[in-house]
Length: 313
Ligand SMILES: Cc1cc2nc3c(=O)[nH]c(=O)nc-3n(C[C@H](O)[C@H](O)[C@H](O)COP(=O)(O)OP(=O)(O)OC[C@H]3O[C@@H](n4cnc5c(N)ncnc54)[C@H](O)[C@@H]3O)c2cc1C
Image (cartoon, rainbow, N blue to C red; front, side, top):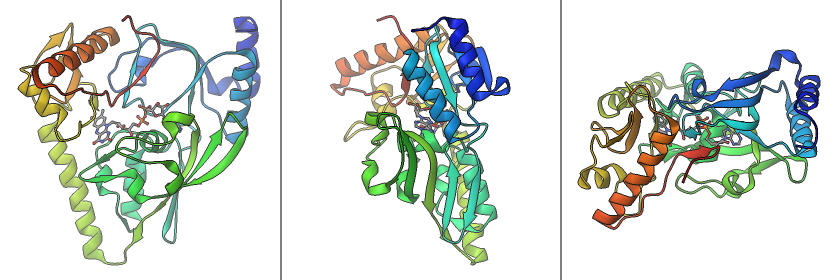
């Protein structure tokens, strides 16, 4: 960092305003694993220009920044994050329905998007029922379930591209979507807004069926997933030709634990926080599971979850 801590804080406050700047926010309160140390700064920019100015300041003063969604696919280190966490949840969460298109801010929740779609007569999003992420995080991850993913209902994404200092609209075709992958993982562009193409149905029976489907997915998740514990959903990606949870079970790891982090016996694809796990417990458990599964089955498990901050190797 090129300036003092106090000077940087004052610069940030001038840009975002005191009401949208917090300091030393415990990230365990913003992640579904319920672990993670403090973020030195935590900002909620009120619009695109403010967001861009925050990033400009970070780049100028050589302070790292990270865009946080709803923390539902993220393991944050116990040491926290020594830079600026930028969260779009507060001011980028509008969802607007018009004709066949639906626009949602990068910080809107998938739940709000889905419920709004159902209320306004749109079908096609029921697969997302029960996925606890934001629109930005969903696009970054290309999240999905039940043979569908967010890419399948997306038309374009408005992003901020920090390297060229531009705001651009990227078509779905140029987002390089694949299984749990998007171009955002290589570029670190920031999702400001997404446009979805959903079918607008006047057919009451079709809408009722869509609502029913969404409810069924939620019930099925409750039955099959350990939702009673904090987690980040499936910890590992599905390897080609196999299922991570099944491999972990076959390796004899159901219930295997380090500290209070455990492989769920209900769904071995989930690592859960049984109450007082540290990020380090979860991290070491991930590594141990990968090692044992490799030894016993030959499959390499790749984490689906993202990591933020430093972890002891
Ligand atoms: C109980 C449970 C069930 C789950 N079920 C599923 C499931 O069925 N299918 C599935 O795919 N996932 C599932 N997940 C994982 C998770 O909900 C998704 O991956 C979700 O899309 C992550 O969104 P998020 O906003 O929480 O992202 P975060 O966890 O906050 O961030 C993930 C990544 O996205 C980036 N990001 C966030 N917002 C933006 C933005 N605006 N612009 C650019 N980058 C951004 C972050 O920088 C980070 O690298 C589940 C999680 C839980 C806890």
